[in-house]
Length: 163
Image 1 (cartoon, rainbow, N blue to C red):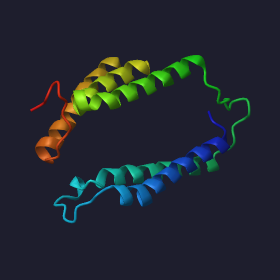
Image 2 (image 1 turned 90 degrees about the horizontal axis):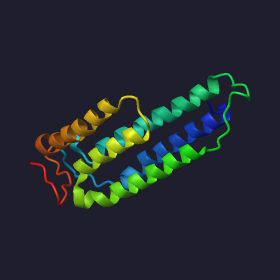
Image 3 (image 1 turned 120 degrees about the horizontal axis):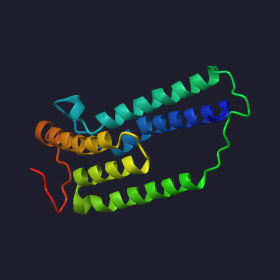
Image 4 (image 1 turned 180 degrees about the vertical axis):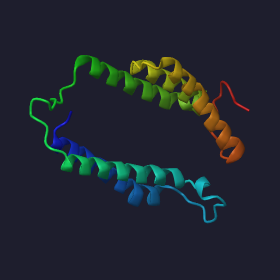
């Protein structure tokens, strides 16, 4: 459990990042065509949804932390990172870098599947079977939705290509 001050700072940081995303990053760096037939197909739609959800969550964390009674000092954890936590964070960094560099060769769908499975096992989830099933079905469902329904090309790899 974080101290009340730390929770407020985290909430303010998320709120600031969301505001930066909504009012600077998306307008400056997302190219939006003039006429999009369906608003959900606009390149800015999902970044805006994520930005607004981040903003709401950040404000909720700030409000919740400000209204909650302060925890006793003995309950608030120190923020030191243990060796197993540091090893997991290092493994996560290696996985994300490997995923980034394998996107062009392997493709977005297959890379997402492998990274999802690796993250399920890295986090030590109790629901490993469900995680593996979701790792296979979710990227495939998203691929078929975007390519067949929305008409958006998903980057394919050079090794295995999907229909």
